[in-house]
Length: 295
Image (cartoon, rainbow, N blue to C red; front, side, top):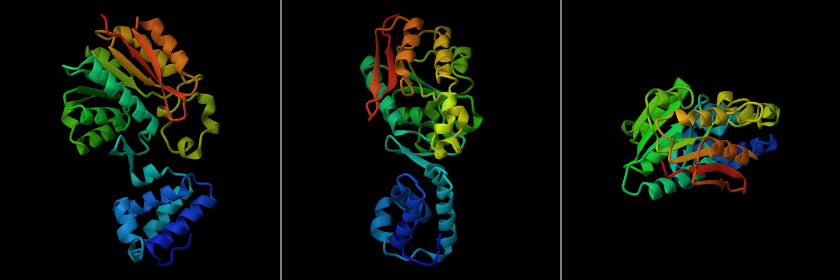
């Protein structure tokens, strides 16, 4: 794309039009985020301080490279290295899945249930497959009295999660465990009161239909869950009896049309007082919440 000197507003118009013609979703929003990253500024500063200013000549080549990376399909979150979640900025890289807005609904539900079921105490919440650490860091930030643990099979993901925890001042309050699913909790005899996981749940056969931004850039180990997309749920639920005790609350994010199957697995594994679904903003049953208050 042309890179002649121009105002920031003109750079925005040119780049958003260029990306839009290539079929980039939300081209305007992506361009705004790229400009904020380029200029190290907030959206308010972009619009009210920089908008009519000349794009600094020394940034012209960097700007061209940023736009071309987005044009090639790279997620804007990986380009700028950040994604907001629950009102907090989280560092992201190709080592971790980009946090999704629907997962905020799972965190919201668990914060509510934890406060209701443990009004005087400090429940232990364990996040399995933590990725960027969005869930445990958000919980630790929102509930200072709670105890929090998080695990992942990927050392690179755990390092990113630790950095995010340090960024938000909660690193010392989170126990980090490297290992596969519930194994590190079982080995250390850790008994979570609240167990949460957003595991890989996309069926393997859906790979060709995924958007290029997901298919080509996000880590496949964090996306795919076997032929039906249910393999990780089966394994985790089969491990629940191996914990020192069954958690009071289990919360899973699930894929489209998977909620009933995951609920059936949970019913077969333990005697729950309640199993309910939390729909996402499109009305899809996106989260399964199981509650068991009796021993």
